[in-house]
Image 1 (cartoon, rainbow, N blue to C red):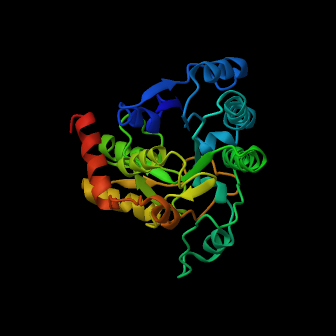
Image 2: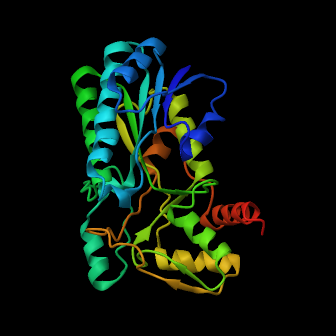
Length: 306
């Protein structure tokens, strides 16, 4: 197949490239805000599949850079969709990297904030009403709604994946798993982290890559017009998550919590299952949290010469 990929140099894209070598791949060579250039590249390549990963993804930063996030993540995506609609009559699927962040505020989040975690264990799925609560999430949800509009209006083929927190990064220590590991390996006595109380679920990179490969290879036969959560349903509080990592590393220092600016309207609960995508194409996560963390810790130890 002819696959057009955006975000090929990002966390997911750089890994995914090596798994798709049997296909003809062209990567986006322009900024998503260069609308005419993007359209021309799509017109010349005529892809069968579009894998759209490119985005600003630093959720926290989106509260301070609202316009760039909207211009890249929403408007850039709309231009890409419409370019495909105008110039790709044989397009089989437009696969969009959405996010669990679209669920945003939910009643359980306020309950946890006020009373702590109870037994109201909830794993969001495709029927959970989104309430995005960050500029990043609003833009992503807007893209989902535009894809649904295009699908209804002119049968535009799409699949959207609401990805959860993915870990196993080898280059970037900004996100929660890698920043905890990196800081603990570099600082014996203390580290600085953000909120301790939110709950999140975590998906290992190899499982995520298999999900993308499964959707690509499906060619829209079973996934066309659908939005999926990926799971796994393995929610854990960030404070407990840091304790787990510390135990696996053998780190006995002190964690200074709340050292980052408070996120407006902090979301205290994000968790998801993978039931629908497993039903449709058979994919499900294989790597349990301990195994994935062990791999990630060993990699960062090697990277730091430990």
